[in-house]
Amino acid sequence: MKLCILHIGFATTDTNRRHLPSPQRFHNLLKPLLTRAVWTTINCLEDDLPTEVDAYDGYLITGGKYSVFEDLDWQYNLFDFIKSLFNASKPLVGICYGHQAIAHALGGQVERSNKGWGVGVRRTAIVDQPNWIDPPLKNIELLSMHQDQVSQMPMGAKCFLSDQFCPFAGYYIGNRILAIQQHPEFTPELCKDLIVKRKERIGDRYEAALKSLTTQHQGKLAGQWIANFLRQALKEDLQEVEQLEEATGQPLNSPQV
Image (cartoon, rainbow, N blue to C red; front, side):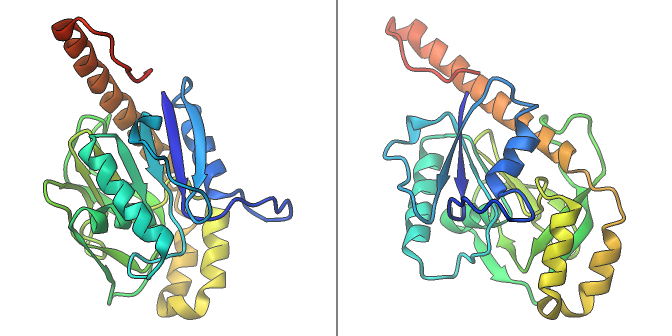
């Protein structure tokens, strides 16, 4: 299984930074769950995107400090690439900014919430039970840090995470798209530092956000969902390849699950 992290940031060699960079946090979350996966990171703000979607079996778009409304060349390139991945039925996971970028690229809507910031540990209801959520649950507690949010899902999407503050906190499209607004890869320490850094912007939610960090978050559980989704999607792709090979008598390139 060859997986590509599309990092919404730059590569960095800063050894003095307090927290691990986003790609490393996703490695730590998912590598123990996808032990046969080979990982590559592309830094979307400075690297070229793959010229062929088949360069990797699946993709994950990280969070980032940017908004889909900004006029940025790299962002337009990413939106086009998301469309190409979707049209090719490549499994794609989006977290926070990635969740928003996928919705925007595929015809949904993203807005700056008039409710303010979603920050700290937030409880979100699981309103649909796709089979990669195992065991079935009613709620999940996840670390959050966002002001923009999806206000209209792409066509064909099903909502599986929802609360009053963020109605479309998680959605999926078959075995092609899994998108989550919250941050399963965050640590409480990182979230706390971001809350403190953005105190003036967060406003009256500041104290409640800090207090929420005493609640145990369930990022590892959401990481298991991501791993289950990718394994299931690539297994179904492999079955389709095997059926085509049997029908045509010709070998085809297939994902390694």
